Length: 416
Image (cartoon, helix red, strand yellow):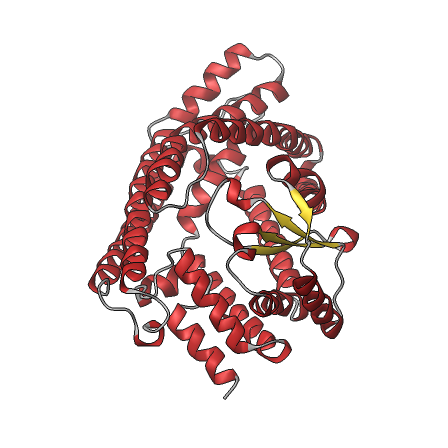
């Protein structure tokens, strides 16, 4: 019965996502040759067509990747791949902790290898075609090795800790595992700006008196403080521009991509940061973090129950080994199957995110120039080849930010 339910949800998930992607492609292509009136004076037809072609290219790649991921999921579960790996590793490792860690590592390694061709195509074909990629093959390999090393350095202790509490703390393991997960994520947030990010990019203090002055006055008006203002060499890897807040407490900082600074003037940068400050002022970041931790608790509680049900394993193509711990199997099966049963959460989270974006925009309109924010957004849409004409249904299901036209209209109304 559970197998049929899993197959039904998997097919529903895949067909829905393929249908949404097809809608997006069709809608964007239908509006490819006409720039929306609100942007006609600022974005050329050539740029609009480029954005449409880039969006279509991304959608087609994503559709192919999702199909392959679904095949891999079925191979791991219903076709017995995970069962095969567990039995073979059981013959290699006598130590149960090593056996279980090896199983997790092998599964993630296979998924990484499967995803690698798509990452390579995206970087060196799609992004290259539209002038965004600046990563050399050598840098791509170096980045991949660094990511692998970090994954092993942080992931191995995390997995070992969770497996240990699953096997040694009885029915209370769920709460211990959740506590470890929360502590791990907070540790990453704390380490990211000062330890992890500098492994990949160079960060230098912002050396622009006009921009620095505007930002400092803005933060004083908003009652906000940071450890520093930094510029990241984003142009080393991509022509895309961005800015972000990172860290918390004394490690909190503002980071600008150098590509962003090269395109926006001081007033526009101030407006963009006012929007980001709006997220902090309205506690969007804290709320999202608490929602994430709350969701993780629900998932761990569900896993705690499912891990004791034989039908959960057998329904996903695995027979638990007698006399040996099956905690790694339970973890892997749960995190493989969970997205299949929770795809309906995506539009809800997207709606909440869009609501927060509108609220942050209204805050920015009060603290800085809304027209400057509009100007900055238009430049970013243009530079990043973001489509101005997304399919409404696809956008409602996926997009974390409002469609460009609706967002610009909302900002214009904020000043009228």
